[in-house]
Length: 190
Image 1 (cartoon, rainbow, N blue to C red):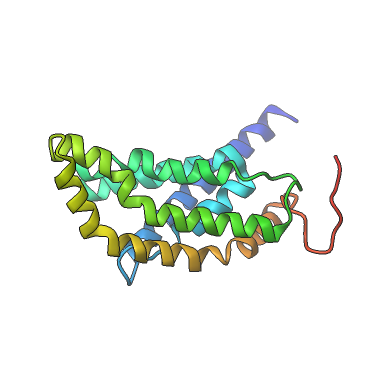
Image 2 (cartoon, rainbow, N blue to C red):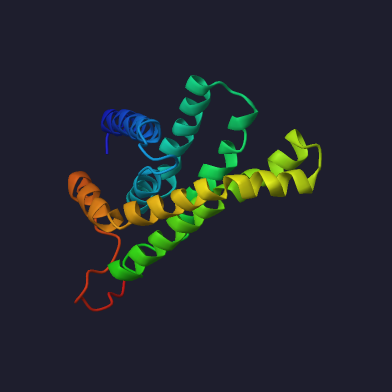
């Protein structure tokens, strides 16, 4: 592959991941019900199709949240809460090791648990930075936010049901191989 062609592919990916980061940001801004959005769906798709590079739009999203919302204390847990979701999706085997139903179920479980646990991911930061080590105040803060975590969980669960069709679409648009075995296909050995 020529140096020119490689640089064009790099520019293409740069633009594509910038677009994906913007889509994540816009998705987070237009939630009609608090904490119900399609973030987990998109992150699952980006990770399944692009692997490690799927973290790029996630971190761009985190940066955009800070840029437009202010790089305040509320933003710091985003630096680890959203990459944890990417990592959990990244750990789901690809390259035909799972069938699409099993992969879809795993993505739904990961999405739902991340939504439910979002407040818990925030809790250590809240405790040590905002509540000065007061675990009782942190527990009350977390319990108060639990309804929002439950709506986040349910929203993620419903949205993640579209993960497999979204991954198929991305693979088709990118000309990449579909990472899961389709129902009815035998296990492939590579």
